[in-house]
Amino acid sequence: MSAPEAVGPVSAAERHGGWATFLQFGYVAGPLIGALWALTMAVVTCTVVSFATGEGVAPKVLPSLAFGAWLGFVWLPDGGRSAVARIVPGVVLAVLLIGVFWLLQPAIVGAEGTGLTTVIAAWVIFGVATAWPLERILRDMPFGAATRHEFEEAVIRFLTGFGYIFFTAIVAIPFYVMVMTSLKNQQQLLQNPLDFTIDLSQGWALFRSYSELFTDFNFGSYLMTSFVVSVATVVLTLLFSVPGAYAVARLRFRGRTAFSRSILLIYMVPMIVLALPIYIAFSMTGLRNSIIGIVMIYPVTTIPVALYMLQGYFRGLPAEIEEAGLMDGLSRLAVIWKITLPLSLPAMASVSLYVFMIAWNEFLLAFMLLDDPSKFTLTRGVAMLNSSEVPRQHLMAGAVIATVPVMVLFLGLERFMTKGLTAGSVKG
Image (cartoon, rainbow, N blue to C red; front, side, top):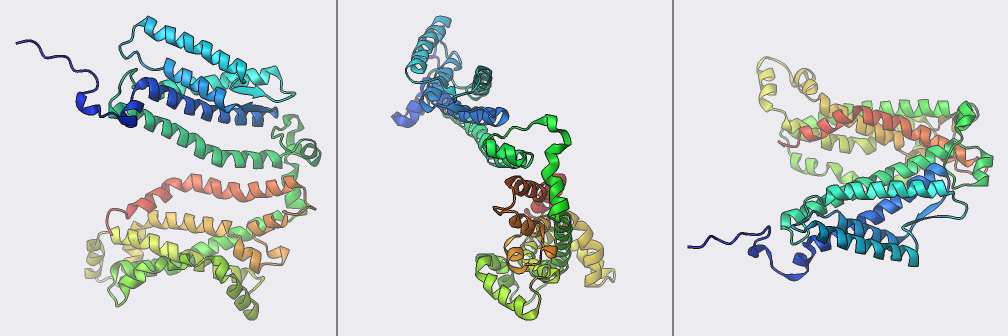
């Protein structure tokens, strides 16, 4: 009896034909993934270099796709090919790639007045940022037919890398532009508004806009007002949401299920719809243009979400611990104070952080209810800077001051927020 025939990397059952199977061949999937990755890196490289140097470099779509397709072919594993079968097609395709660059344009070109050093630096960054990750993306992709697992693994690696870059760029680029603009003076902004480089030789003069905000625009008072209002909002929210969430999670009463399901219904009504009634009511009661009015209305927007977050956590706590406390003679309030709340510190920390960020960043109610500059919150003060009479660098500096404190607070306490948000996800 003859020996069984060797089975290749892809069994016959996995070959179904059609476009799906056609794309699973390495010499198709590799260049396709490489082309998309190279175009992504060309855009990222040109953005980074232009922002860092102030000189313009631009990506070209078709040449970038061609460069990536060539790399996607070259970086594919051997797949049983000999050295000649691997090198010769790569060289031939390199000649075609040079022809594409000659007939069209290179993948990255410099604008008029851009120095050769900047263009070379852009190409070096582009080449490394394209070739090195692409080798890792395609390391398990054979030259011939790939299994479904090998193909999906390469696609997932590509999408993961693209996701990291895309979402990082969405967050980092606006923040970078905001910070760099705040460090410029009026003359520099008028000369070249799109130049986001800074002159470090100015020293402390770079922060002139920030010092002028505190000396000329009373931003110290805005910071203190926002801090006091945010802390007061957190305290009031916890005072109402902790008993409410505990009642929904532990006690039995008529309408409990309907109340639990309707907690977040307030968020179905846009705040802009409630703006006019709130404005009229606060004007009639004398609460408009007062810090007390702001502290009274902010918890209305934060208590529902705090109730929703805390009730899930309370349901996840073992009821036996509270029952043991009741059997030992503790009242229900004593059980909450001595047992439930200490066990709920992670959830309360996450809720407090979330509520603080909502109150710190709230703008609509502050803009509608506050007219006296001495009582402005930080967001209301930043809106005041959005005027043709105020230099743009002051507006950007105000935005940085409003953003950085809450960002530092979130990054410092993020682990508590994550722990609190997920703690009640198993039970309840």
